[in-house]
Image: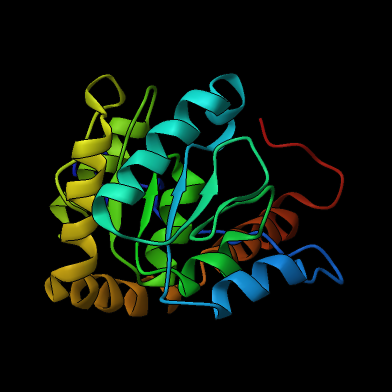
Length: 211
């Protein structure tokens, strides 16, 4: 996903993603299961924690975009429930379960959401807002798994609809996304960290803090 920067000093390494555990005993809402089974594979549109501050605005924009594109959608924009026969708004759903069931994922490009989308092997539509999000959007487009990024200030229903249509209909995006997913899924990002911590315990002894 991200090569090791050439200017890093020795001892700094990129180990790969640390995937969060799914909540114990978690099961998808039957409403969501029924929606997924009731028609063509939908797309996902979400804006992470940012959605809570502009729930109605983001939801309306996504609804218009999905209508223009003629796509079914699962929205994570701050509202919940059926918004139409073809659009379901959801709350918290583990991305490792949801994203592989989508035709494409449009999101704000937070680091965690970006990683989950890559792991799922589905095309992306990058809609960065702030902080590190433009960087992760640029990585998705550079790797060829996302359409050209749409900064939030330029986001319109027409632009989102066009990007979603391209992501869903151009097979090259899915092919590249699946190939990247294979490589990312083969990583064990936590293992080198565990090994490094164990080495510290061996060299410094239990209970001693590094200086």
